[in-house]
Length: 437
Ligand SMILES: Cc1cc2nc3c(=O)[nH]c(=O)nc-3n(C[C@H](O)[C@H](O)[C@H](O)COP(=O)(O)OP(=O)(O)OC[C@H]3O[C@@H](n4cnc5c(N)ncnc54)[C@H](O)[C@@H]3O)c2cc1C
Image (cartoon, rainbow, N blue to C red; front, side, top):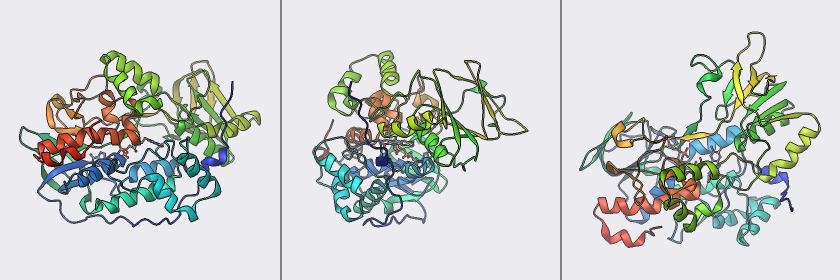
C-alpha cells in the first residue's frame, strides 16, 4: 500500500504577516430598531451568508457577534491551538459563489511576494487541482477582504444575542444592545467544546490543572496529558512536545487515523448530499458517526511517530478515560479503562465540538431538538415551526449532511437559505441570481 506522507513543515506557515487587506471597522453605535435580516453570530458562516445577501441586493442586514470581529472566534481558536494552516483546501472559502468575486486562491496569488516557497508550491498544487494546504494568515486576510468588499463591517455590531422570538410576521431579536425587529433571522452560532462526561469527576467544577482545547494554556514544563484523537488533540500534543514536555496521548481508537479532511469529500458534492437526503433519520445519524470521525492531517505523522520512538510521547490506544482527579500535591491524574493511571502537570481535553442548535435562544417548541439536532426544513434550512428563522453551520448537519459545519458547507447552506430569505422579503426578481443547490 502507498502511504501519503507530505512533509510536516507544511504545518509551519508564518502567522501575523501584513497582507494587502483592509482592516475591519465595526459599528459601535446603537442597533437599528428594525432590519430585513438579523444574522446571529459573525463567524465564517455569517460572512458567507452576508456576502451573498449583498450580491442579491439585500443591504439591510445586521450582524451581531459577541466577539466583535467577523471570523474572530475561528481565528482565535486556531491561534490558541497554534494551528497555522487550514485543513480544508483552497476551493473551500467563505467568499461568495457565482459572482466572479476574488476567491481564496485568487487572493493568495495576489499575495505572492509574501508567501514562502512551500506556500507557493501549495498554490500551484491547488491550481493543478490537487490537495492543498492554506495558511491561516491568508484565510484571515481573505476574510478581511470579503468583509471590506461587501461592506459587512458597517453592518456588524459587537453584542450578545439573548433571545430570538419568532411569530408569523416577524422575529423579535433581543440583544445586549437593544431589540431589533427583523423580517427574517439566520442563526450562525457555531459550535462549543464537547464537555467531559458527568462521571469523570464529581461536581460541576473542572479539577485544577484540567482544561479544554479552546482555553489558552501555558506550557506545563513537565508532563502533559492530552485526551482526544482529533486535529485539536494532535495540535496540543505537538505544542507540548515542542515546549519540551513529555506527553501522554489518550485515544479511544485502536490507532491514530490520518486523513486529509475530517469529512468524506463526497459530502461537499451533490452526489454525497443526495445519498444523505434519501435516507431515514437513523441512517443519517449513522452516517454522521461514520463520516465525521476524529482524524489528524497527514503532515503530523512524521513528528508524532518520531516523538513516540524517542520516548517523549506515549500513546494510550484503544482505551477510554474513566475518571479524572485533581491532586492537592501536584498535577491531576487520569484513570483509564485498561487500569492504567496517568499523571501530569496538566490534562488537556480535546473531546470534539457540539453544535449550538438555537436551544439557548429560541423556544423549545421551535427547536424541537432530537438527538441533539434541531428540526430544520431541508430545502430552506429554516426551523419547521418558525420558517422565518434559519440555521447555518454545524446546526444544519442533519438537513445538509456532515459537510454543513465546514467552510464549504456554509456556502452550500447559504445557497439554500438566501432564496428563502428573498421570498420572505418579497424580492423575487433577484431570486434567479442565487444558485440553488
Ligand atoms: C480548531 C478548528 C479548526 C477548524 N478547521 C477547519 C478547516 O480547516 N476547514 C473547515 O472547513 N472547517 C474547519 N473548522 C470548522 C469551523 O469551525 C467552521 O468551518 C467555521 O468556523 C464555522 O463557522 P461558524 O460561523 O459556523 O462558527 P464560528 O466561526 O465559530 O462563529 C460563530 C460565532 O457566533 C458567535 N455567537 C454565538 N452565539 C452568539 C450569541 N448568542 N450572540 C452573539 N454572538 C454569538 C460567536 O461569538 C462566534 O463568533 C475548524 C474548527 C475548529 C474548532
